[in-house]
Length: 129
Image (cartoon, rainbow, N blue to C red; front, side, top):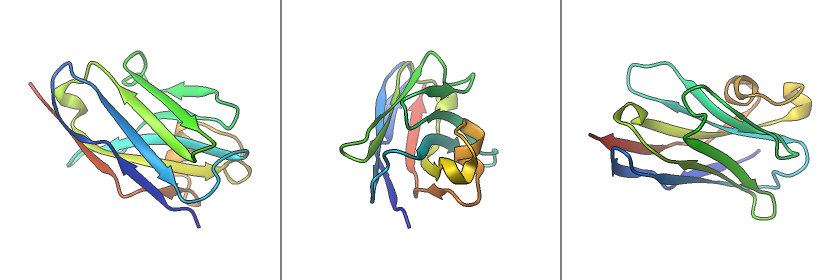
C-alpha cells in the first residue's frame, strides 16, 4: 500500500506561482511512474504531467511551458511547479503513482487512470483574476 499526501495548494492571483508537493509513504524509486492530475467541479479529470523512474517527463498541452514536474527519490517526494497561473487552473490537484510493471510503462494516462495505481486526497488551487 502506498500513501500519497499532497501539500502546497492555496489561493493566488492570476500570473502567480505555486509549488505543489507530494510525499509518498514508501520508496518511490526504481519502478514507479508518478504524475499529477486535476479536477474542477463538474469537470472531467485532466492529466497534467508524468515523470518516469529515469526522470523522463511528459506534459499535457495545458501544462507544457507553465508547469514543471520533478521528483526527489531520496526524499520520496514529487513536485509540480506551476507558473503563470490562470483562473482556469482553479481545481483540486492530485498526485498519482503506479508501478511501471503494472501499467506496462509510464504515461500521463497510465499513471492517472490505472485502477491499480494510487492517488492522494488532493490539494486545492484557486486562481483569482
